[in-house]
Length: 77
Image (cartoon, rainbow, N blue to C red):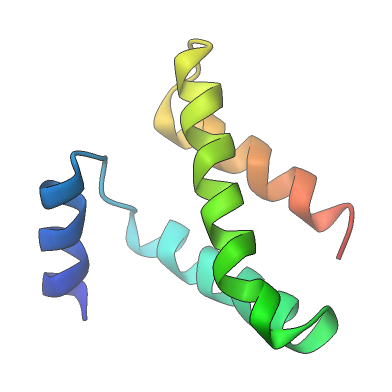
């Protein structure tokens, strides 16, 4: 899975997630699937990614942006 995700990141031109970030995102996806609605999971992860990219555009590092967006998600789960 990691090799494929690395290829995907390179193909679409984005930074690859660290192992810790990938695990945190998988936990968040599980929480959305089980706590909100399963079919909301892909849309939620897309929106999280868009929010991370927006924060990067505002000058945050990838790590800062990811942490901020995931913290925001935790406020509504």
